[in-house]
Amino acid sequence: MAGAIIENMSTKKLCIVGGILLVFQIIAFLVGGLIGPTTAVSYMSVKCVDARKNHHKTKWLMPWGPNQCDKIRDIEEAIPREIEANDIVFSVHIPLPSMEMSPWFQFMLFILQLDIAFKLNNQIRENAEVSMDVSLAYRDDAFAEWTEMAHERVPRKLKCTFTSPKTPEHEGRYYECDVLPFMEIGSVAHKFYLLNIRLPVNEKKKINVGIGEIKDIRLVGIHQNGGFTKVWFAMKTFLTPSIFIIMVWYWRRITMMSRPPVLLEKVIFALGISMTFINIPVEWFSIGFDWTWMLLFGDIRQGIFYAMLLSFWIIFCGEHMMDQHERNHIAGYWKQVGPIAVGSFCLFIFDMCERGVQLTNPFYSIWTTDVGTELAMAFIIVAGICLCLYFLFLCFMVFQVFRNISGKQSSLPAMSKVRRLHYEGLIFRFKFLMLITLACAAMTVIFFIVSQVTEGHWKWGGVTVQVNSAFFTGIYGMWNLYVFALMFLYAPSHKNYGEDQSNGMPLPCKSREDCTLFVSELYQELFSTSKYSFINDNAASGI
Image 1 (cartoon, rainbow, N blue to C red):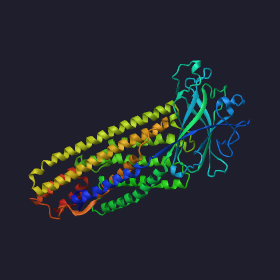
Image 2 (cartoon, helix red, strand yellow):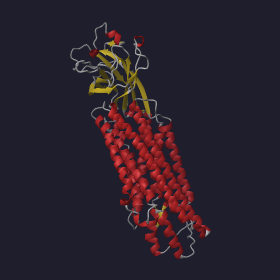
Image 3 (cartoon, rainbow, N blue to C red):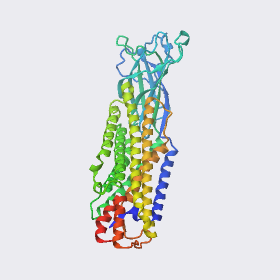
């Protein structure tokens, strides 16, 4: 019966395969290195006047263009014109003049900055909250009517400080306020968007009282770069059939064997399925359909892959470290895999609490309340700590595996030179693969933490932190190449164990019993894939 390709393929061919995979890994970094993943655009609102008595009837106020609204330059201009605060509408057109939005942008994330001036008779109170009446509309033609997309009352807590003394001579200076999360939309299906923001004042109900004198409202819009989207789609379109074909080929070779698949072979196949699931380029449909749930669906797919990948590494190391009677049983890993499953479920609940709600209310954000912010921050910190601890535990397992291998290497000096070189080569291949696994795990942990911190930083308000797209495409390519390599190297080989991999000559054994005993023990301790095929099929019939 054939063993695994990692054991039977010649060193020259393995080097060629490794070189090809390395070239593809470099290409994965390069294709994303030229284009930034996101673009940030600043918008300054225009102060329009809506003097109608009934503001509940929808009237869309344009900041510019042929049907532009009646505007005022600043709040001071409203006083002589007897314009009340309830009549002022802050209007923002998306995108800027002479531009169009595109489905290639994939999503829109907006953060809000309030310019608040200090006034002795209108200071910002402690725990002040601004309440905005926000209407969002869209259209696909510059002369078409606006269609309402969302209308919500949006409360936001103000966190402002005034660094100068609060004296009359410092009136008019601006507070330093934290930026606020404002809106997130999971698709960009239309060419033009319009925001009308009102700040209704009701002294009896204490609405927008004690929030200072708001001079201007500025927005920063963040969307995915269209060029990066095309590169991302192209990678998914290329990698999906590649992983699917190698997965089908791998499982076909497994099922052709006379024995049932072992646990390691099953989890490698499951890893291939999860990689294919995350690869499928369903994002192509977002170009033609208004699917606002694509961000949530993408998070779910990535969460499933994370859970499968982390579980695989535990089983992969454990199958080469546990005693013979404990191997090949998934129940033996419940203490390690169980917390991974619980953590993945918590990730899903956390994502549903925000992006799930945003499917119906794009202005909702878990970061808008003190409790929500603390929970979100705690989640990011705890997730990062848990992943670091997981990586340390994985390093410990790899150390245990290497220690077991070192114990078996003491038998090698007593062999003939050809036999010793052969098995030393097998051990080196396995150790090298384990180190590649550790490197892949380290990069995955770094990618998860950085991506979470970056996304959180957007929602805290910063727009200066931007992970280079080469990191995204490089890590994504690394996952695919790693899964591809596993399915290729651990697939059953057409060569026999009793043949030398380099020239097809029989392995030199002093005796049949010696060769059978040594190889059986070595493979039981080192290679879980080959141990079953070798012991079950070859040991009984003789080598």
